[in-house]
Image 1 (cartoon, rainbow, N blue to C red):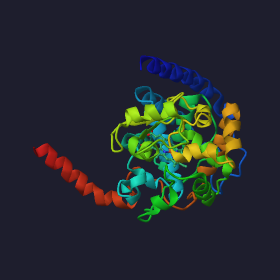
Image 2 (cartoon, rainbow, N blue to C red; image 1 turned 120 degrees about the horizontal axis):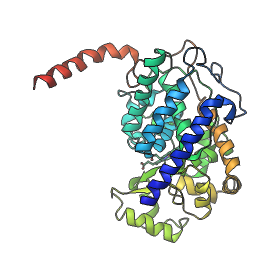
Image 3 (tube, rainbow, N blue to C red; image 1 turned 90 degrees about the horizontal axis):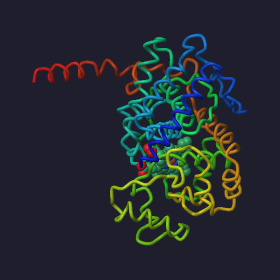
Image 4 (cartoon, rainbow, N blue to C red; image 1 turned 30 degrees about the horizontal axis):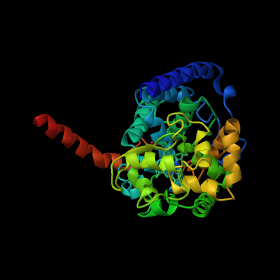
Length: 352
Ligand code: HEM
């Protein structure tokens, strides 16, 4: 544990050094994915109205991740869950959105949602309410990768925040369950305009973060999934001695806090946590891509940046669509609704 902590400190220190050099040379050092950017999104979108937005986000996240590097995984996942359901419109940040109450989103980290609103407060206090919450989430997801890997890529911005809640059940339709096989994974990615290479690269996000027993218990109970290596099975059984246990397992056994290509090496050793992970190696359509990424981290990183740029463009609102939220967790039209409640709460708590 102590070794893990000093490793994280070292990684954050290295990231800090890179941060200093990045800030001085702006976006030239960043990898830029060669993909067609959605209409209305642009690199350097805030250059005139909030040129310091990326620096403000990065500075704050450095402090957040120094306290709890797990937030990097939480934010990266939050961005994916936002984009897959009704596009990258920040709807996942809304307290009143039904999507937050549905099973696939119950294990999102509440603190990660809070971090995005803190970023909004910092950025809006310097620039005014000109940067959307969905863009702040996109930037924060990029920086989650940067701080845990050192790899930096440019993201096009200009998303507007959604004003419509997703339908009940939409999360089940759009998000992928951990017990999904590759055919379902590829089908659901394809619906969002993402191809096989994108699907494998994005699964590489499971290079950081954790899973609760309930997400993989069917692979270890009642018996070992035959596509799982035995010593890995034993280690998962230790953290989850019963199907409903409260334990957690790292998604990448080799380097749980570092974003790298070891996740693909895990898969080749049959040490992927979810069926949706492991089946990418078992399925002969995706296996060659898994092997390629296991052999070349630079190729994985560049493919990941391409796939993230594509995912970050899914069904985005731009131009005059949507709004720039004054608070990330509430639609502007609902702020007035909430105000009396908030005031009443403050009044009643101070009366006690
Ligand atoms: C086949 C597609 C995917 C499936 C089935 C899937 C499923 C899951 C599940 C079940 C968890 C753990 C929930 C828990 O038990 O706490 C998880 C965690 C995570 N996922 Fe995915 N995911 C997929 C795609 C993605 C994508 C596209 C990203 C980001 C680009 C992503 C990033 C993450 C991260 C970083 C975590 C760890 C979160 C944390 O530590 O809080 N996942 N995923």
